[in-house]
Image (cartoon, rainbow, N blue to C red; front, side):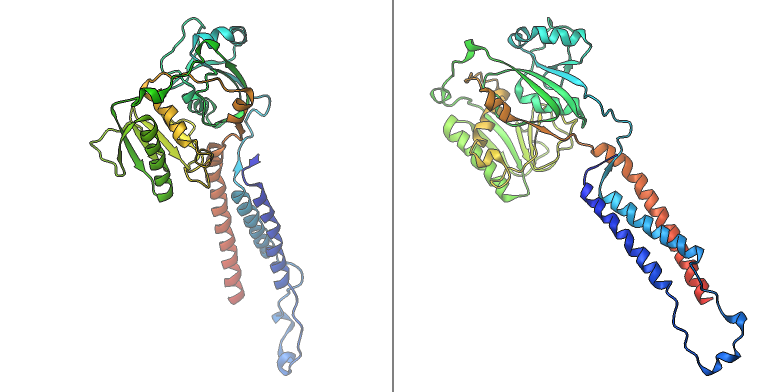
Length: 372
């Protein structure tokens, strides 16, 4: 069993409190002689020597309540049946001919050994053979979403194959181990000057900003204004959702229940949903200066511009990233155990309720007997 908040286990030391209270009330009082005591017979004297059995059980129940409460607060994870050995190896490949040919030896070995291989896309697709390449919607912009779907909260050993053309800008969080296999195509390093083709896109891009925090709303508005000024993008921005409207982009600080096809959702400041659709881009931090690396470094407009280029099908080729730049973009994180924790929590709460009921029953019996 693992614990998400193991420091809360120190609360078990509070088990000494009910023990101390129990022995305090078990102390024998001092006998004071008074005149009428000689008329009292021996049969009226209550034998209070030693510990009474029901009070011992009451003390044990109270100790168990303290221990169980500390256990619940430490958020235990039921991983008795989890595979604690070597994590499962998963190969995620960008559906690109150059990437496939560059790492054909590694991919063929993986298929021969029975290791799962998936095409990178709007949703991961199992690779049957390396000849039939699914090129539709295969972009590194979907890398995080594909990793989330394949991991589903578990730690895996990812092997990531992608085209290193400088298009990967945002940080990628990998639950478990990973190895990078970037493919650099030197024939596609020529960069298109978007400024000379201003405006890059003549249509209006419909945007919904659904933020509760004014600072986050202002940050995103400023980033969109920078894209308008530099590249000539035209945005139709709304701050209140209209059921009749269809949006190209939705920025929000809360999880979206039913993502619409064709709409890109940028959700910030929430724990990732491992089964979220690929069109939902999840950011752990809020888009504020104090929280977001993208905002603090001033790269938010550039990052949003890259998303627009991919969504609108505008082809740009930038210089490939260096090895150190790629390593800085990937970060290993602890696998989420929320589902396992949620499965164990109701049983712990049930035991806690039963122990509280038993403790109250014994305490009431003790009170009635003392006053009876």
